[in-house]
Image (cartoon, rainbow, N blue to C red):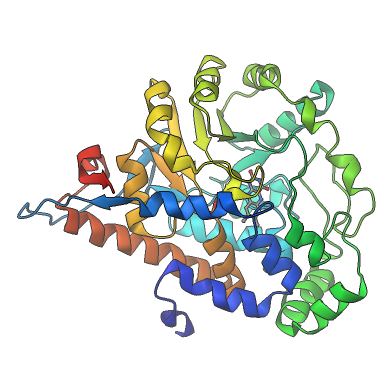
Length: 382
Ligand code: FNR
């Protein structure tokens, strides 16, 4: 019942901000350097408005959307978010269960702290997102592990050749390797909800969290000094590795984190099934333009390849704008992690339901009944 006071996706942030240590709230909310890319993700949506149609019979509305042969309840899902289980107790499980219960897709991050096998048990439809070194002898066993666990969709994140420059993390003492400095210690003990509800509870029930899914083997614990070793050679990753994965991976293959239409064309030529147009929530290269701005050009390059988008989606109206400009499907990041912090699985369900209800209302107000009726002439750029 307490969740009824959350009326929109943005409402979850204040609770998460209060409950989380500053270093974790900063980790979720922040972007790289000046946050220009984060801001552009919102600005781009605000530059479009609607041209609704009226007096169409809009009863019997239906927002189901088919993606890679599966019909989902709505045209949105949950993108990969690393260290979710450090922010909310069993965060990845919470997110994936809420998605499964609502028949929406959820992507597990390579830098998650719960094994991909456990997540698959909690949600047989979960997708896996990889962070890969450009080294075939490390890529191949990872692909095989994901296949053995029964995953159908493999997402390669392409926009992380080097770690980003997120100054807020450094200022708050959230560094790799994580170190318990006096500042971090103070930050945690002044946030008892997180300290007892997430951290102590995790240690008690599951032991020290490890990065479970970066490599074919278990990775280092979150407090490890060896963490950097695991992310070595990412700057060598190239399209030739995508082609190698394409040969080995029988399921759907997605490249996430491209922005350029040229890269979308290369993705299609490499046999990729879908691209996720994304600037990583503004968390990698600062000043990268919003995915929404590049969407029309990228969908012109798609020729049948599935085009997904993320970054800045907070409302049903944003989902519809992205679909009108050429996306087949979208993903919503930060608000759902805040919802997990604020209300666990019920919080995420509340957030997903709010977004779904907004889309239903918006379809009616736009004078349409189905997702396939969302066309470019429903939006205008200011
Ligand atoms: C991310 N993102 C991300 N992407 C990815 O491919 N692998 C990852 O491990 C992560 N980790 C991660 C952690 C956190 C805390 C956030 C907020 C984001 C990026 C994510 O998948 C997505 O692209 C953006 O979050 C979408 O933007 P919004 O909806 O958060 O604005």
